[in-house]
Amino acid sequence: MATMESLIVTVNRIQRACTVLGDHGGDTALPTLWEALPSVVVVGGQSSGKSSVLESIVGRDFLPRGSGIVTRRPLVLQLHKTEQWVQEYGEFLHLPKKKFTDFSMVRREIQDETDRMTGKSKQISPVPIHLSIYSPNVVNLTLIDLPGLTKVAVEGQPDSIVQDIESMVRSYVEKPNCIILAITPANQDIATSDAMKLSREVDPTGERTFGVLTKLDLMDKGTNAVDVLEGRAYPLQHPWVGIVNRSQADINKNIDMIAARRKEREYFATSPDYGHLASKMGSEYLAKLLSKHLESVIRARLPGITSLINRSIDELEAELSHLGRPVAVDAGAQLYTILELCRAFDRIFKEHLEGGRPGGDRIYGVFDHQLPAALRKLPFDRHLSLQNIRKVVSEADGYQPHLIAPEQGYRRLIDGALNYFRGPAEASVDAVHFLLKELVRRSIAETQELKRFPTLQAEIAAAANEALERFREESKKTTLRLVDMESSYLTVDFFRKLPQEVEKGGNPTSLSADRYAEGHFRRIGSNVSSYVGMVSDTLRNTIPKAVVYCQVREAKQSLLDHFYIQVGKKEGKQLAQLLDEDAALMERRQQCAKRLELYKSARDEIDSVSWAR
Image (cartoon, rainbow, N blue to C red):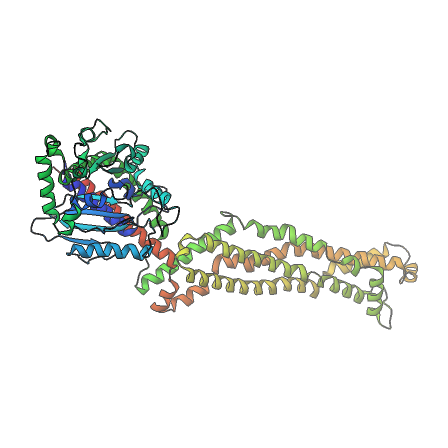
């Protein structure tokens, strides 16, 4: 099995990588990897000795000190054990690659970074500071120091500060993978301990809580904390640990932490009250105890962590596949990419026309509903009124009356009637053009691969609409030609039947007498209406054929042909401009790729240490 150190080192490395990437979930339903990895959270009231405990564990004096709220932002502290010959140093996440070997400068940077976020007021911020310390005098461990719990707001703090701090602390300690290090001063009644009260609420069984008693050397003479340390006064599942921190006099004398550790060991070894517990007291023992427990928790959580990592990898790979590969820099590859994207759009556009996607049925609706309705609404009743027929026929005859049938009158009436068909013909062309433009817009929106490239989207839309305009003009010419052809040559059989119909009416002499009577004009109107109806039936069938042939068929076959020619002439720089990706998508892909790399690396590392022998 993997050693304790290798597991914790691996988890520390993964946690740091998560932090670098800002891997805090946000857009995924899965828990974050950071949340799944156990860590130790230090909780305590103000002036409970939290900072001294941390410095004792680290063996360095590096935390800001003062009265009131000193810790005003969470401090994520990662300890990395190094070889004995390696010089100790600290490194902040916000100052990568800058090593702090002077730990007084670490203290200064923590203070300055806190002030950068909160100002020089006494406000707090939930945004953590990340600090890694590399030293041969530490154990591998991740500790999170939080602002001290308080009961009242002081000058310069909002009234909500008490609740704000508690909410921040709860957000950490409520997580099931959090190990709670509850700090309580020994010279304070344990029943009033803020840290123990909160830990009991979030961890009622005490399974995740380690109790630490500080300031044992400051208790009143004749009193001790043996009942607490031996687990009788306030039992926990884990043993209590007593700590003796440096006194203010020691701090003023600049006694280093190594000497302070030695002094602490001597205190417990020579104490009449705690001598029998000396081997399980002190900051060094606490660090080892936490590290050992952290290792056991990590080992127990490994199956769940591995499962989370695998699910996250699947999710990220699916998203990357959806977002597409990065754009190639080679001009040939860029041209190929553009053509592939055009074909993807064209495929979806054809699916709309051919029924695989909705929209094409609306074109049929133009021919089945709109065109017939428009033809029915043509004003033939007004054109073929008795008054208009008499006027047209009379004007056509001129100074000589017609002999048998008013041929010129018929022609003028028919020409005038057929001219009305131009409107429905043009309207059909425009309606189909509008629908094709709408299908182009929808097809671009539905082409997932194109979402990355707003410039190319705009170019394809412009090229497609330009092509549709050309198709519309050709379609309009063709449909109007159909109408003009009906006007330019009237069906001969129609005229041949007219004299026969007249003769069937009876006496030609009486017909001659009725030549300008109302019945005569009614027969003319009826004959013209019959002919116009015949033409209307013809155009109702031929206009859709012309529109489909000139617009729909051309859109299916050659919508982007002109665009392909233009793209083929472009140079590499122009092609790159077409593939100018949406900035948000580029950023999203980069983040997904980095997170995927992180998760795969985490899986490999965990696998390697889990099965190490």
